[in-house]
Length: 194
Image (cartoon, rainbow, N blue to C red; front, side, top):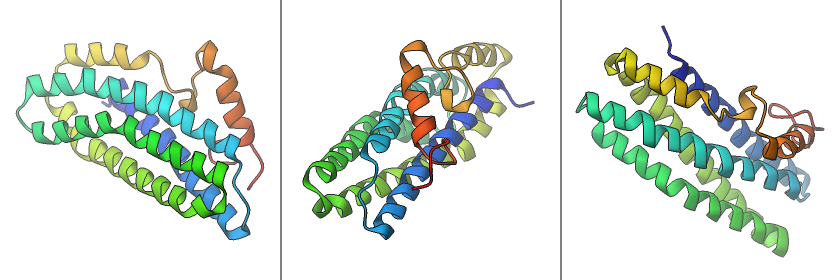
């Protein structure tokens, strides 16, 4: 049986991966056309990454899941330390990407390559990070955590769900998610192709 926490983590990872890949896809399309990207769409997408995965998703893993795993097994503690470090540096990394995007928007095409490079590195970092969690940490959790651990985790992870996984956004985020869905092309949104 797959626990709710594991399903939630995988759903949130899938939503984030789709968002990150959509950003790369948009950038590639605009580069081929020689046009600037829709910076408003990029800002909304990066704000989502900063608000949900960086501040909420990571916090649930680092403050709830990893401590329970460390208490139950000595296996993978070094890996969890590395993943916690990734979480700690994630907010800094997204700021660097946002700054590179702002430089591209304000200073023009001379900053396109730097932004695309920063974005590509961030996407690679994040996809690799999530793959490690799914390949190493989640199977370990399913082996060693107790039913009581799972009850606590399932309840905690069930709160403040990522709206891109099909849950209604909190009131203050409704406009953001409506905007993302309406301006961003598939697979994330309903907006026109770039």
